[in-house]
Image 1 (tube, rainbow, N blue to C red):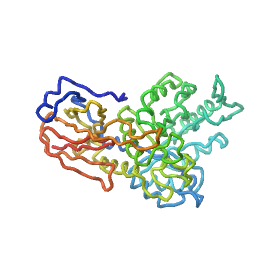
Image 2: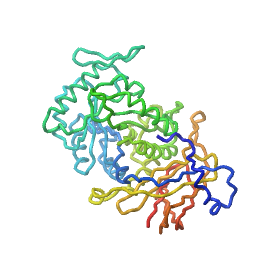
Image 3: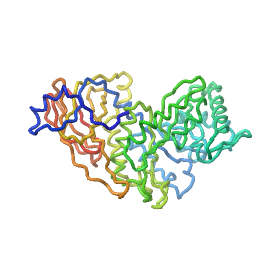
Image 4: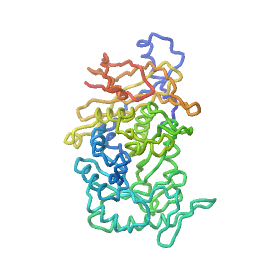
Length: 434
């Protein structure tokens, strides 16, 4: 995972003397032939948490079917939900018919596992089922065992036994054996090691930056996840099933709506670059209108369904990068010879290289610097960084898409084998086409 240091390649900086009319006392640069990743695979890596089980209650925003249309417009294809109500199942079924699939999350150990097996069979929208949610919080009991979550010797016999029973029930059913079973996710990733040896197909990870820069949620946290292996000692792919920012409740860990709109796309891009197969934002909509309850203020949408800036930025990304179903099945991303350089010694350039099936490259580019003062609880003003992208061959068009704007601002750039632009503290997408 990127460590935030400047990316330097001194032996490829000579061209800057030709394109920058400034003295290069300090230089940040990256240059190489790089394999692109599929742009649509990035879109498909995005998920969002929902609470459709509350669709039965008029006071819940999930009772409003207009919310489904907001989800469709967002362009995210995966949700994670703890549905157990008939109204919730009906809504999830409708989403499934529209191509949005879900993880089913048990609410606890009170219900027989057989109920969840039945629901998986009845509702095709569920692509996966997850283990118990954050067992390091409230202790769980199962089959006469109770977890110990406090003190110097935590132990999770109930959670482990439940996971073993859930995994066996899914995999022994002929109709479900190919369905994905995720591990339980601890609230604190460093405690994932206490679940080492449980059976699972995908490791479920919860990680929050709590008002901090996106790399805080990755790096060491991903390493801590790898302390949990399968019974035969194997590592499995990781899905981050909860991450995000809340925008109210001034307790030192909130962030402004404008700040979340910059940090969230950066977090999603860094997670994908680090090999995380799926990242679920917490959550789709604010569940209440109380400014003093952080749990009600994580949404991409406000309680009244109005769009926060983060919703706009992610919707613009998915709209720009998604591929046609038929095209993406046959597509294998290629490579691009390029280098990114700037004369600003304080810049921390980050990027993610993607390609669509039409051959167009999309270079997601941003300055990985803080944009929120946690102590003062205010946005930071970060000046744009002048940078140059040098290409290994001539391309006809270069277009910068400012995904954080509504409507999305698009700027054409003159190009042959180089593009100059201002790199922001938020993700911009540089489209490069022959």
